[in-house]
Image (cartoon, rainbow, N blue to C red):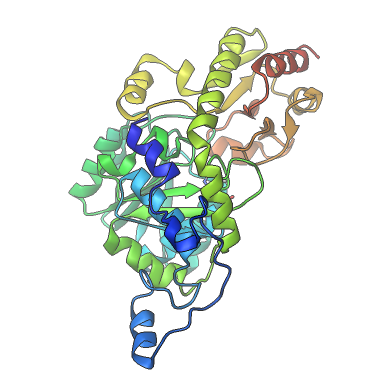
Length: 386
Ligand SMILES: *Cc1c(COP(=O)(O)O)cnc(C)c1O
């Protein structure tokens, strides 16, 4: 991580002369902002991206967070929302129209996939395709492909893709590219510097960092984000509260420090699980093949701590026995907080759905928190032995 990022996190876009010299910004908990005249009011309403008029448009506390996120991603502008899904749906709602085709690559976040399936009633098509390398995306493009939407690493399989290559393929057919960069955080991967158009974050995860706040963001060029603000944000109204933004500014302050611990912990856990006789495979860039490691070196500055293992014995009884035997890892969705979590994919009757998403029955997602790594290793080992 560059020195610049540390400075952005701690100080950028904060001005304590605005809040009595307090080292932390104030929570500006207000719905509206009074103006001196009619002219001033209408001027403010005409430019809600930069002027305070109504807190559904711009709020000073939330704007601090937006400026930091944009700077960290090297983007021109960011908009924050009340959840990651709100950021995703507002973006898709804004950039897509009837007749457009969306290409999902190697699975994206499940509810986002479901949203796009639902959008078929508005005439928006989508395909979820699986590729080993970015170049293969070409053969799945259609005449009406408007958007290539992906994660790298991908959800579940943790497969990495070459961002430069995807941006190039998209430019050739005039399509937009959108990456969900939640796993890497803006500290470990900067897709905009590789010509990706839109970056999505679920701030609920590492940036909040304490499992106590939900939010999302989209980052990109002014022109695109302005449109998303005008339509997806203003008209759909999934507004973040100033309180939440303040918690995220606070979470961000320790992001670099926390990621260093997560990285050290996950390496230690993976080193210990690597050759375990009950595990068929592990999905994480740290233990990936050479080709994947080349991509990792090109794009990433570090590892984060979400990965999956595939159990050799993949009956529902065995998978749930392993999960239920864990004592430190808590059984829950989500990740990015202080606490280690486990989330199996097989519920005993969803074999069809898993197959369609290329997810093995025995796949279990593990999230490594900030506990002592020896405690976590001991816990996984005793659960595998049970
Ligand atoms: C959690 C998550 C989301 C959705 O974010 P919410 O804040 O839960 O709405 C989107 N993408 C990824 C990769 C996630 O993990």
